[in-house]
Length: 219
Image (cartoon, rainbow, N blue to C red; front, side, top):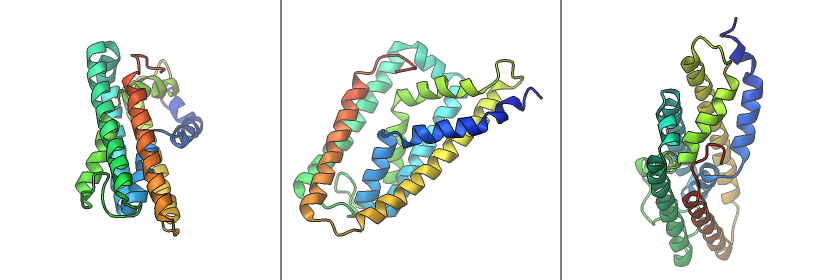
């Protein structure tokens, strides 16, 4: 009976996850950007990559690797700067595409490379894995829904993590479809360039925000 207690909190957990998914961030922005620029296939693969990253973060948190990241300032700083550099690279790629006049909906990636499912998946995976705040979030958020005296806390953590990953993936897939439908509207070339430039600026801003993030699971 004690072990079933965490399942009783599933509705609350899923509601909290929905709110978190709907909050604009790197995952949402990247999914929208890749769907608008590369179409449904690009958005789908980016979303799958993001979800794979979330799954790996869940495993890391469940087996203590995220705790090590939270404890080690050096490890946190390394991942943080790698993540910031990657987001900056994505942002600069979008700004370059806007400068060249590449319109959203084209099959080119943010560096004008032809569509590649592996490249889109890798882009989503790296953007998620290289964000240490995701690991700290998993470490701080999920345990709140696990009873303190649970006989199998790791299994409960993994189960809630799986719910988180699947629900987040579903949200991103819906976001892909919505973005693609909007992108199909006839958008003036100038508007498309402004959209790309705005996305690039946001990625650069996210890179700067991550770079100045301190070692704080609640931050």
